[in-house]
Image (cartoon, rainbow, N blue to C red; front, side, top):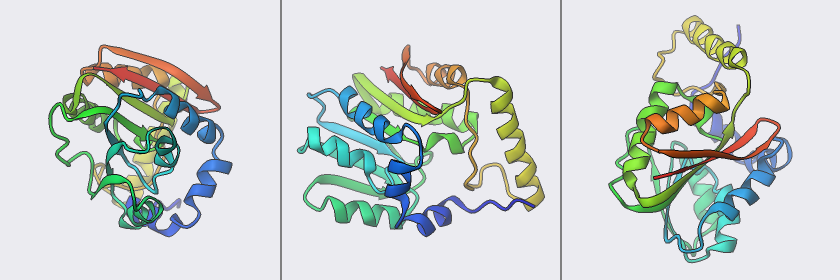
Length: 217
């Protein structure tokens, strides 16, 4: 029987190898970090980073915007510790929490980003989160999501059904955070963002399954 791990434990065990893995083993990620930087407006002052992990995207973003004020949210204290050690001189507020439950505020951020984190969750949960992100952004603000997405509905259906099967076998509730990839199709991901309140959503990058969407408030 295939075993899956609790989300926080999964990343805690891999914190030392995470950066190298993302930059060298996941096709499109290195290019995705560069593309994300290009999309963040120069006038951005306050950034929300959901699932910030070790701050790989911030490594790239701070090269362009070194004085940016960042709020980063992640479940893993080990990942956040690695981030803080990399950027001790930056204006970063790190929150160790579940971003589905964290208070994101209202009209606080110029821009929000997430990188390879949303493909672990149910569509209903993501729609709720997108509503919170939309509310947290200032008028005209951007949400930039780079994630693992697929093209065929049959592939999406397979991964979600496998996740449900494994959870049932292991007695894991659907809202417990365990590490298993459940990518949506690009079309379904765009539709979830629109249901979350974003009227303008576009695909701006795709390499292998690494895909980037930009949603504007």
